[in-house]
View 1: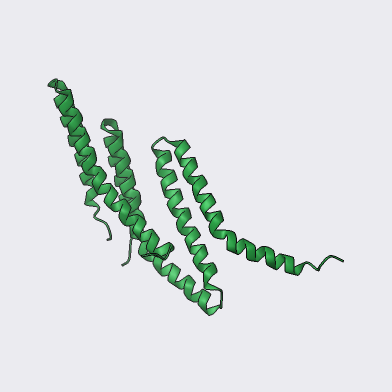
View 2: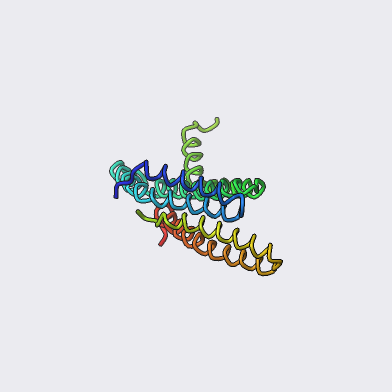
Length: 133
Length: 68
């Protein structure tokens, strides 16, 4: 399904406007409008992202890259997106401390995901170094 | 269109109506009722938003994390 950029920008503008109106009366409702708009925009985009990922996988299969690495990278992108989403929303709601904790959790989980790749890199580098004496 | 955009207007409308009712009930001197109206409106909106957040997380899991 083709999605117009105009629709997404319009959705964002409408959500911003409505949240400004409602914020004077009930700030929590305004926050929920913002959450909804964020989810809606991402759900518009998810089909396109799916196509891009299929393309990357196809290229990786053609290039004989180990699929484990591609999957790890995609998982890292997913974790980064979720963490960013939550952190920005909490920061908007005025809770900077919780936002930093969410970001910290995202970074640590990404590092854990990347451990196998890091191990392979270090082993490769060690293999390149000629053995001492 | 994956999502119903009307829900945004619905949320804003419920917010305005709830604020209106809250003010009127407050003026009538019924503070408890005003609080309950606010709470119920909030739960109703929270339900809608939680549904779509659940949808979003399921999609992210399916696309990026290769589960379900």
